[in-house]
Length: 607
Image 1 (cartoon, rainbow, N blue to C red):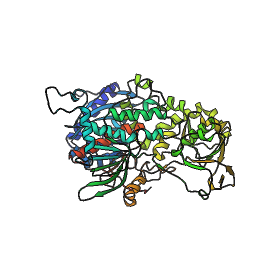
Image 2 (image 1 turned 180 degrees about the horizontal axis):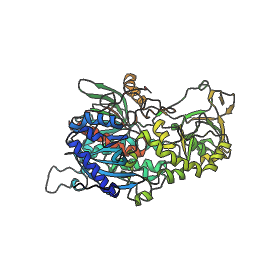
Image 3 (image 1 turned 45 degrees about the vertical axis):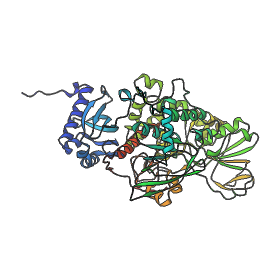
Image 4 (image 1 turned 30 degrees about the vertical axis):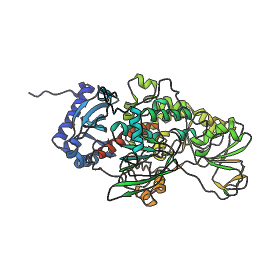
């Protein structure tokens, strides 16, 4: 007698457990077709290191089949189990799970749907969290610190740290050298320290955080505090929602000290060369005027996604008698009271700088060369981020780490589908504001497909402003608006392509930043920069993000076409989240594990 199961009566946990069990069984028996059949016809598997030793997304049955055919025997996945109760809503069952591989342990998130009467995976995330036998010394594995007993040769904790620091480049070499000691380099340095990877972070500034201290005084984070924590050590619960630059600078300096990150300030890398025979880099550095040679195996460029200033060269710049500054060089408005200032650009830095200059009674003109996406800060916090990064999210059990994985589980291919409805809400909520901006002549957009801020950031890293007040100055005409391309400079003005002449004592080029591989051209050579190719972007074939589709951020936090060369960058959220996966890749290589890279990224664009 056969019993028919009424699938409509299954709980979310029943659905989740059944799918996980079927998936693990198929993997255990190496029945790849059975595993493929557990995925929907349109489906996405994003893997963060655990199956691929890469950051990669495969799509649909063919993609799942290829990933498993290439990696299944080596990975030998097992121990799939629910990590918390599953939840079903709107036809989707969301399942958090733990799993193991031959070398590590991971966390995952799968969204299950019904297709042809069967439960199948729509989106599937697998992420490596730790390596077996190389777990971080946290919780009940933490070190004692104290050394009990009698030891005539005893050295204090600080003496040991000082000896370690003095040995670099002399009796010891870092396995990993991180060039750039901003938020990205510091986050990665903390991860590597906790994982026991000999690593050194170097930075040209005198103190950690000076990158922030040097910027214009009104600069603050436009992302909220819940989005911006560093690894291991969160901001205190009285930290401002939007941290001013000097608080961020001091926190980075404090963090570097407390996390005991090996960090050389006032140190500039002057050249680097990779030896194909020894698989080592030779990096020449200048530390406080002293020339030193370091020989790391792995070289990480953490010079910032917004680190290579894009400074245009306009005819007449050599005869202009006033000051010219890239936005990264602008220290603030104090010296420009009563002066005429032309700010070329209409994105975040341009608005911030214009606002501060207006407050100090400068006569400011913004030059808009292309349309800009503007989203009001309050609307972004409430509608765009509130469910993941907020006090409300924390109260609902969504920790920073959980939010990172939720956000990371959304395949880039379909992320715009989740974002468009949110930005439609913001358009409606702030329609009066947008009308005032258009009435002032400002050209607005919401991205090529109306998907808003996050997709613009991921695709091109530019073209937007999170409005914290300065947009109203343009709407009200208090900051003048000019539109068009710059044709040339005269001795005392900026001339646009339509002949408009803008008198200027100061010209600020808020013209953004170039690809991070430009730093490689400076440090190594142009051939290596071209071998690596452009950093950032998804290949979405939208404005400033040329195709073909790549599905992940180009060259970021993963192996590149140049052996032993890596890139770490992005905002604080990305620096925190993806530093884990980069650190695990470096740790595995340091420990001598086999790390065959699945789908090493092709190079389609040089810069």
